[in-house]
Image (cartoon, rainbow over all chains, first blue to last red):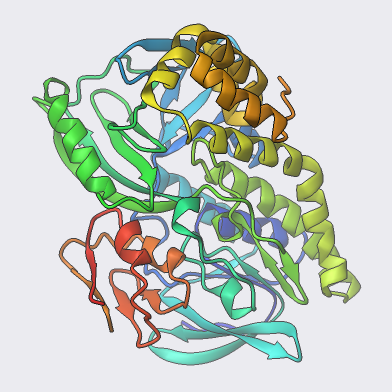
Length: 408
Length: 57
């Protein structure tokens, strides 16, 4: 297929972040191209497919049964002992959905196209074009041929395995303790606890520094997966297979329709989100929630912020770092503080052993446990732990002194 | 090329690429290529969710 060689904006990566970024730039009148190295939008998914209403609203997505396949009204947290804490989130309005991501991404691509963006598939970006230090485009291998594509702004939305930001000189490789490794089976025939509730299983032997999840996708279908710290000797697959084996009564009639894998950033975001003629959005910027590992919502939000600042820059003809910095400033203002709190929660919880997790599970209001996913409630948890266990008191105290803001 | 990837176990998720400190790995849709920049640090072997990588030191 024929494509122009000069654009206002080139978005690298056609996942939710890239598609949203492309749509938003196009809506604002920018000549926009979205490129992806794959030959199709969507699969394979590296995702548990949970998406809350909060992010659906931010991304202005309109749920329909083709991709919003299971409404979720609550969460069940299961401690190492098996003790369950059930939180009904339907009272706060609908909690969200488990989505069929392949369909969602396809429909997001339709919207981007209708907004005026063009999409180029089987197009692998292998370097950026530079003029001095400014990024002026990309070098892409399209259908087997190397081509230069010029752009006023290049936006890196190329996910966890992002290389474009590295081509632009940013350091995005993650230390093993700052990411989680995930493995998942999508299965039918699963015996669910509740068709409309997400199940999360915790424990040192279950999922070190992570959790096993069962996310219902309608009827007897579910994503059964695990996330564990990436620095361990045993693979995520081994942990998951072991868990499924020890819970085989749930899977007697089950079998697999998809095998998925992925690495999830749980670290602080990269230092810079922009450079001259350059922006980074989504997993590539490491803005994934460090506690629950959700990245779609973060990417959608950042996409809108990036397009707001970037489209203005294109219009004024100034695509310098200083001009584009408005995007990072907006993100810092809206999300920065909360993100720092969530990171603190992660660093607290990864130090806990099973005994301490049991204490928290039985003495803290389940609503507070769920709020931890937004960075709230750490003070309550620390106090509960300190109260219940003399050993934990010392640890909790040192954590508080070390700078926990103890906020609710 | 000290990192060896078992194509049959690999789920081409790109996780290895994200932890490589020297940019020696590249995910090309359904397979990962290892370049001679590899320094055998072993990060990819540990991070791989499928246990598909062996690093020969």
